[in-house]
Image (cartoon, rainbow, N blue to C red; front, side):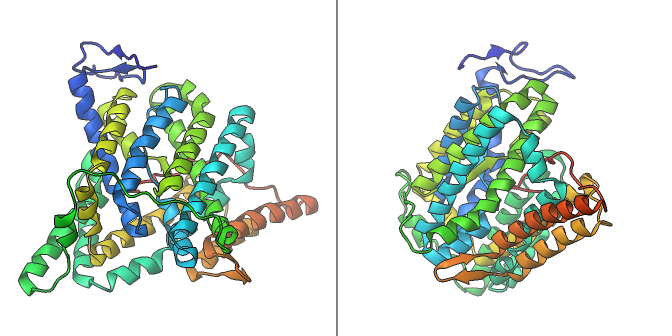
Length: 445
């Protein structure tokens, strides 16, 4: 498993050739490309814990551990990086408000266990049943509603510091438009840097304390991450877990899309690892939630780096995973990211949450969903309004949030509506293959 065949002379990749998962360049080049993957994933991976108030170092640790676990479960045949998933932001935010961090972690663990179970089923029975449960019109609606549901959170941060927020937002857009390739894919990360520096300048010019560096100065250079544990004993546990279940649908679609992307760029046999990929992500998410990290997913940014470098060697991901673990052992690194001011977060999330929503709409466009059919119209329309308006239903301590209601509505309207249509012979259902959902785990640009 830990042996890679040297590709060519170990230094260059010939035109039209690729470095296969079982190959590698020389170790110098392998380490360099591995560190490039760390940079690619870093902006998104740190942003999720910053937005959800989770420890950055803990999330970074289980991002690295999860990546190594993913490589082991997929038998070193599927190159991929596991970073923080943006799909968890909304349910974590809602769950924390209801039952605290322990309840949110319980939800993450539940998602991980269910995702692993789905992976076992896919490995045994194939993907056909997933395609039928979540066709493009439903998948697009669920992905879109997760992004749009977060819009008020972006505004709450933005209005606290409008100037840094505006500068950050403009920077993110300009970087994504001006740059192609690697720099374009990390536009969110670059926008945060620009917004942060702008806030420092404003603070120096006005004397107003916008960033407090005391925690950075006090943090040691080396130390263990802070561990937190799930709490399954709160009265709200089951309503919290219900909030997280729609995330499983997103992670399934995202993992399937990423596996298909890697297969298209390397070898079609990689598709055989789809079940293993889901199991690995499920176990990694469960492990992260058990000790205080955010849920994981495969990262689109890193697939982009592979496409740009034509190096699909799993060796570079071992380097990236180990590097992430090393970075997590510096509390000072985590303290720096915890100082990101709310205005910068407001600016970057205005773009980010909107882009998550657009990814859902892109699923509809790419799969040519027929919105002349009432069933498809109401599947998308009702789900989005429930999520954007923040509908909730509550029975005692049990509460269903907007994401749950929107997801359930999309599934029920689509499947019941098509069952009625088939019974009355008024139209066939709008199925089709599950689409390659974009990089919800990272920068959707």
